[in-house]
Length: 579
Image (cartoon, rainbow, N blue to C red; front, side):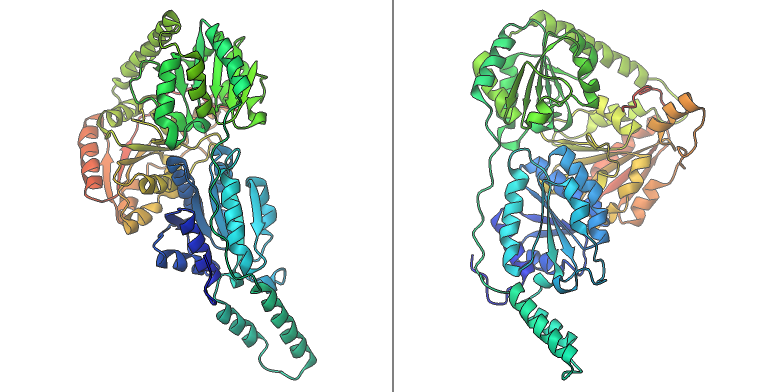
């Protein structure tokens, strides 16, 4: 690609994004980044502007996870960048390849009190794989290509490219700005020095080379180590009670079907977490959803595919005395808190496919599998009994069971919240691979609006649900304005119990005080209507079915809709707080 003489830096970046195959940029506008957005629109990229910078990054994150590509967000300088940091950290911990383009003060005015001029690099560096800052217009595209490569290679993760505003606008315009800045008092020594300095500075900014490089191919995931796979296969062959845990890192769009087939051939009772949910559909004979801790305690071999031994496995203690095989892109994560008998470093999904070629046994450990299945079905019966208990308002288990019954087979579920969202995760099953998004290991509330936006763009035409706790809903409720403006017909269900219930339940029990955990049963449905969506209120169990039917019809007609459901308090998840 050869840049035209006065092509703006923003247009050059947009052209490079198009070369990389990026179809959409998520953003909240700002003068520092306007040339990127205008250039992207002119080149046919979709530009979706949101109401909070975090939502732009969450959307880019979701898009990357569901498509296997990179997700791109652009935010303005200063508070635009700082508002994005929580979402950026969430992407880092989720190992999601997000490219964040951040505006910055003009190069000539850095550290001189310019608008929104802060040390952005110091703030962002701890939360990304790589951070770079362009110093010349010619740096922009090579640095973007470098950022995209780093985001995808090895353990994926977010990257940050800082783009000073005077590198993004057309060169003649910038020269005019700096010429006007030295007009008047033309004979003074100070004016002559300023003119000389600015001419020299602009010459460096826009100096050669003018030709941008072509886009490089993005790296594929690392292949697993073959000798380690051979050792893992021997351990599996000698196991009587194996269990397989699959996490987000194992699932990629291009191999999801092959991975599901490999799991069937391995014949191991299987638990799915994170982005792994839905990989086996809803009713696969190897799929287990409950009593995981008991299964792990009794297992003699546990295969962790992209799952570290962090707080979710009680730092490895849930695995008891089992022999551990860890498949992971990261050597550090493979050995976190519990040293495995075998660590297979490489893409864990591809490792499982290769392991199935070495140790296939669809009828493996049939008695053990039957025992795990019986325990799982017993828990399902318990949940069904609890869902049938009537109260004064709506039973949360009855609500999520109704959603499970009616949601379309192409549905994508976004969970955002504590108690209600986690309750939903026990009941609402993704219908297929890469159709589930939740706050993840960082426990980040506020993902709902952005994740749903990214999911809707990644899965056009699919039914996209946000299952909100009422505490979490407020973080991104304003994105109903975004959904309305951009024609994104999500279905949001807010479980309203007027409480930060996950915290309150344990806080009151341990400390005897509900301070700072009490909310109002607010009219979230009315707020959604104010932003241009449709709102529905549900007060009793017998109103659920009609409300969900209306909501799905509204979404099918192209409208975003919010169903506000007044819930009874529940003890379903007592004792669920993790540290």
